[in-house]
Image 1 (cartoon, rainbow, N blue to C red):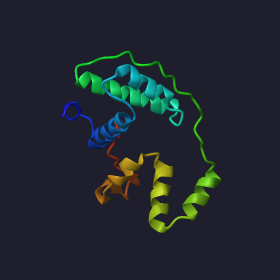
Image 2: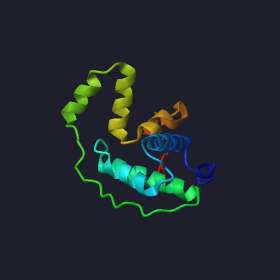
Image 3: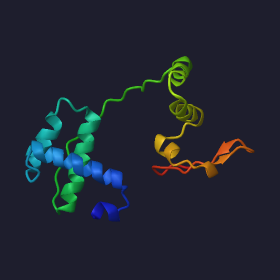
Image 4: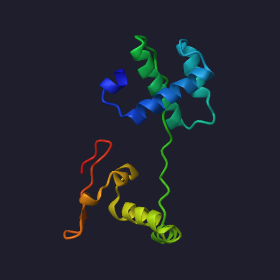
Length: 141
């Protein structure tokens, strides 16, 4: 309820609850030091995942009126994989029409999948050759 009041999306709330349940199966959530040790010792999690779990746990503690000293977890910074133009064209060409159209739209516009899914026929202007995109995640249209 508190997350909903703070304007978080339902999908964000569901993923946070799922993560807390998972963490609760791994450790006693009432024991902050044990939880901290559990989060930082997960070898299968990368540093970004560890930090996200620590942030979610901190929000949980805040909701329950408790606090802790969050561990300092610095994620590794890596350059993302960026496919070449040829690789993108090969991927698009290998897909069925519907998927190929979606991928081509993503490639040419740079929009998010969540923005693509929300598109309606009214958003397409064939005269102006534009798409009216409804932004997600607080981005600009």
